[in-house]
Amino acid sequence: MGLRVYNTLHGKKEEFVPLVKDKVSMYVCGPTVYDTSHIGHARSVVVFDTIFRWLTQLGYDVTYVRNFTDVDDKIIKKANETGEDCTTITEKYIDEFHTEMDALNVLRPTIEPKATGHITHIINFIQMLIDKGKAYHVPGGDVYFSIESFKDYGKLSGRNPEDMKAGARIAVDEKKENPMDFTLWKPAKPGEPFWESPWGKGRPGWHIECSAMSYEYLGEGFDIHGGGKDLIFPHHENEIAQSEAVFGGQFVKYWIHNGFVDINNEKMSKSLGNFTMIKSVLEKYSPEVIRMFLLSNHYRSPIDYSEDSMREVSMGLDRIYGFMDRVASATRMDGSPVKGELWDEFSEAMNDDFNTAKAIACVYDAVKKGNKLLDEAGQMPDDSSQNHLSCVLNDIKAISNVLGIFLIDPEVYFKNKKDKGMADLAASRTAVSDVCESAITEAQIEDLISQRKQARKDKDFSRADEIRDQLQRMKIILEDGPAGTTWRFE
Image (cartoon, rainbow, N blue to C red; front, top):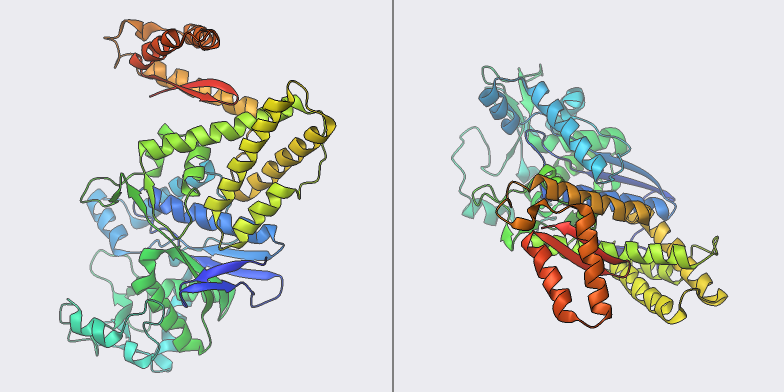
């Protein structure tokens, strides 16, 4: 099955056929760099990183552009509050963003333009709109786009401009010809950053930067434009209006939008105080657990971040690494063909609108069947079983390059997990000082786990539960998996 993509523009899945054979052009809206990035930003970046990887895997030559908005009201407000200049603030958060995305094994896009590096392109684009009668300059320096000049306004979001105008709560701005017209260029206020333009000193509006930069790097029209669902209106709707008003042809062939991240079944919002920053999540969970969590639901669906969901993903990752470790120990064959049954199932899922949830489920199913085969085969499987298991392992390794997970050597993975558990335990000693066992050592923990294993073997389940409870009082959680029992600090 060839690749099919859900196109927001038409509200349905469509066969993916790029504008130029064997090449794909993709633009994704990046962050406005005025603060630390949150888990919602991470989802969008990881989703489109995985799409980028899969398109590359399919053999396309992909040009991937993801921008930074580094001039904006929020950035200026932050500068006024902190006393720092805007560039210092934006460079700080760009560096932080890169550090966090590198930790999540996100590949760098082909091009990462900044709005402030393209002011000339933005001014030229605005001038083209004015020349075509699609935008107008008013006294004072403002330039607005006229939505009445673009008859298809609303085609991405499905909104009717007249209905929007009737129901809008917009302060009356007598400078605008229509209250729904949006800003392309705004005059600078005292103390704000500015650039010289034909309309006076000022700075660009938000929407125009993406039209100008996508044109600069991808041309008048391109294959894929992506971002979060919150960008459909007004940002992406306005991009369409600007770009198609200038060039006349179709701006983007496929519009792709990812769903939101909820926190404990609530919408993430500053008013609720549940904004969860990526750096905080990285302090609690390994990058692979975070990345696997972000891919565990279909990208268009919402996903709920909670301790329970992260624990479930962590245990699932343990099962996969445990299987990889078992296969490496139980087989002596290598070089089996990568394009096995698992790879075919994985490819079918990815070609169905990048369905990473189904793709990961295919891996789980193969691991379950593989563990059953190992259990039945005993210490050394026959050649046929070894060949099958080796093929599954090689398929998982190939899949890892698409999903950006399962990339660690299993021995290193479990060692890191154990080391993290000990570090957490050491850091928590003060917090649990009232528990008499709080001075327990790693060796003592391993000894208790061995005693519990023997108790279970002897069917002394009462003693096994007693040991688990003893460790739980010390905030130590046991996780039983195919590779044995691992532990972590709660």
